[in-house]
Image 1 (cartoon, rainbow, N blue to C red):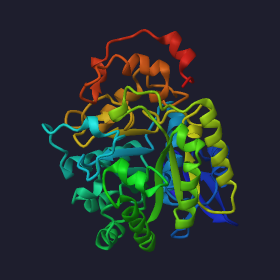
Image 2: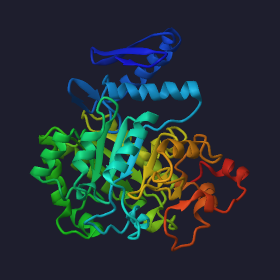
Image 3: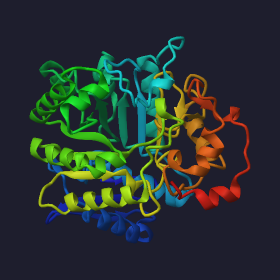
Length: 413
């Protein structure tokens, strides 16, 4: 059962379906919405089961867990308050990394003159994120396993409120480290795989043997009860040549629970290079491939951002359902978007979130990924000098009047 001041919800699994009953002062009024929510949940593929509960994707808690019900609470709060609250706190805890990825999105955020947040400062952000309603805390880098306090930070996440996840290159998933991750309560992890071809993956990351070590580490995690996913990205070339599908087949064969396919987004070291943005035909093929694998009699799930970050999906996550924090405490809408709304050493995360979601350009749902939108890039990215140190404070962006163009171009890639 999850309880709010105005509502309580009892949920259970009956015949493989999650069923919820609303009670309390607003229970009767909100029951249709609760029914609609669980109808949507029950239409999704179950990719795994954990502690007797059903997992529909690695980014949401299992249902009907307490943390999962907070996901519903957030939706109800948004409906009643008309204000966005975060699902995901995406927190960089270090920018150190063994890899030298040519496509690294975090590289321009690295500043040797700055000090990374202390464990206490990070915990304060976690507390604030949970207070806002987050049900997922993702620790990223750099490589998060290079920060020795990672296990302490995973343990710190209140598992009745949120699930902890990490994104990793997989190089440090030794037996000992995996055991410590499991003991700390890690729910899941995503391993970044750039190509279905081991040689190309190793070349992109400039680390010999990186591919093999990542897959060996993933198997150790599965044996320890940690759900595993692959994080990759699609280019027009990798879609057309079948490399994306080859990776999906490998993931199925290896026993991964999920694959997340990001669009190739102009960010980080390639902030100004829009040549790799997917075409409409690329997206059509990628969506068809996703549908093909989703309909297979196999539990592995696929998160295709070409669908999710589109008008038919939820649109842009940034400042609607997530925020990103650099290892120095700067808060941006997402890890691809270099526009900064404040630093947690100077403001609370609650204050920064409010500042972000009340800004005229971030207060409403954006129908596509902002970093792939011509209108957004013209206003916020194109004016930036090529060698600018990121992130850039939103107050430092010269105002450009593009209201009409943004309306016309928001969905154009």
